[in-house]
Image (cartoon, rainbow, N blue to C red; front, side, top):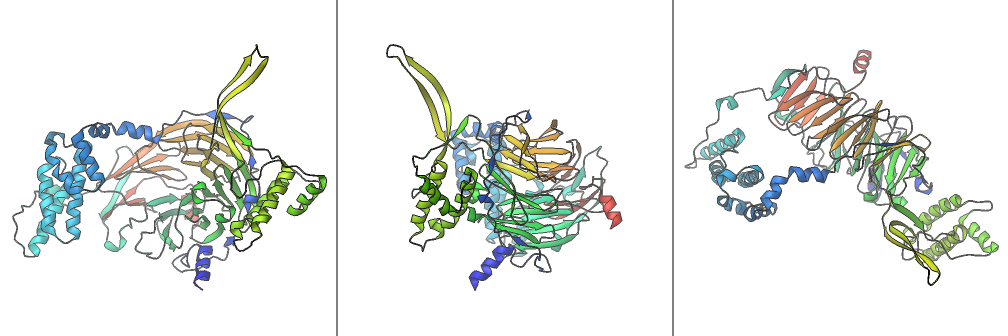
Length: 618
């Protein structure tokens, strides 16, 4: 019975917690069709428009440039010992070495390492209900790092003294002086000049309404905003592996749900009404924005692993679903039937090599081979390959562990495949691949006139030549975009044919089309294109998380929110004294929340096109 219940939960993906009313979807479609049997067509990029773009720097290059202070600090044996101790969480050792660094050098990375070590020691003793020991470290911190102490540190120090006095304990600690301005109820948010925005309301948040920090992933949709707890940490859903909340365009919570599966991959379209999620056990789920599951497919039955699946997506109309495996992409409809399937060409300089089989047979043996796989004359190689994949999945010994004839049946299938195609089958008892990639590094023809002979000398390397798909998205026209590891972004039409491709020289993390703009995101830069032309470059490394909307995009850093219009112009900026936990639009304006405070900013552009028309209609 437990197995049946578990299977039902996996099918629905939500364990009966679709929304607050607990209604289950009557439109859920479970796909048993195997798109893997639909052989992806390897596309060619020759003959289609090629659009080179300014190369994007790699993340590690910029991180290295920004970390020169750290590298210089590591070159000092004294400081290297401190960094290593902190990395090993040996906080007492870190503080014990503080006197080896002069006060004038306790800044930058080394200073903040001391500060974080003190903070961890103070918090450890606070959680153990030992305020006196916490105060010991707090006092040392203010004496040894006076230039790094903030008003928050002083207030925490004074609060610990108050706790000690409330318990009737005697002490010799002295309260810190906190500037009066920081004690008053002051404005903890500000907006940039020239933005035209107004800070209209500001106040504290009651405990019951405080933002849940577990919902740390934000995506805009056509109808509202989705907030995800991808790691299942929300206290409101203790039995869930992940959770999601949906707010409409007016900022009202419409639905929230704990999900029975975790979220390993996630894709949300700003112009669509749902999202696609891949679980760590290769379950592909599609939900609408009322958090009702409308599609499920178990991708384990196509013989793949989760780390091979880099991308999943659902079209804006929720009628097509996309997933990728290594360098192949399948676009299927809601019933799992293949709309198109493509395979990217190998990385530049690599050649695909198919090892030919030495097996041959008589015409009768060829006929028997056709009968075995269920085909007859006339046939083509594509028919044989498709049928071979279908039978290999069904007859594989791993799928039939109790059948003593499974291995023999699989061997016969391999022999039949080799007879009919002349290629080595991909499966044998050793599971050795017969298709590999070769990179020719040097090729030279050597002639020996004295002997009257000549031969070709080739130096090559064998390895993974597949150009993995690292980003992918579906368009509202039935086509989509595929971004590869080598930095190519290929546009595919509704028939699965390549139209054009861009080259940025760096792996794209996200490719998304919000007509008329195409956004290509790397770890360091955002490309904005219109009609194939590069409109703007926006450097985003270390600038925060991106939220794409229909009218622009938002960069949310720890304490700063910056709004850009659709073509990349910076419109305005919102700053907070504390880390921003949640943002959402309402009818009155944009709400920005920290852990304890909320602000309403008027004049911020709407996240949606035609929102006012829709509100009037409603």
